[in-house]
Length: 122
Image (cartoon, rainbow, N blue to C red; front, side, top):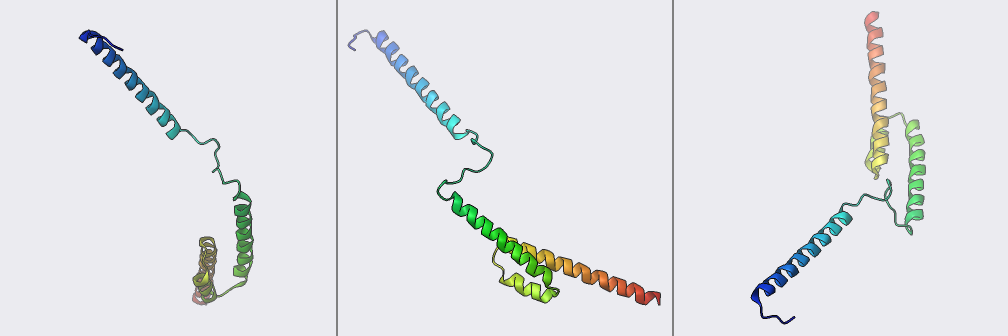
């Protein structure tokens, strides 16, 4: 409070600095533990209000993909699938259509190979 001894003032100031340093270290440790805290669960925490809506949208997308899958299975022309591919907007839809195109092309190559081998055996 009020001391005239300079040595005592230095000791008081150094004690105050040490307390401030310790407080800063505690604050830094607290921040670090909060910053690197592992998630409470393995799955992403969804906003509870939006969860039913996002679940419904996901189910609708799955139903649309199932319908598209049936439609793609019925198509036997690469040109029609290519048109469908250009019109598709979602990644999963395009992925499904590209797989169907690859399958059709592989079947065409296999049929051409078989036809070529049959013709060459004659």
